[in-house]
Image (cartoon, rainbow, N blue to C red):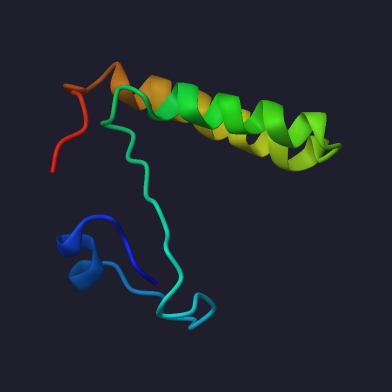
Length: 79
């Protein structure tokens, strides 16, 4: 799997081997101020496509991110 950040390419691994080495992936961290709203937007797209269960899972994850953000310093994404 290939991340946009080179340091992620070296540190984050797919131990199950389900993601091809050349597949681009993107990681959102809860410390990113935009992460919860990004997940909610994606959840809306899933819902519009009829995938209600996955949409709810993402919304729940976004809520968990917001709770976590209240206990730490969030910031804009950086490299």
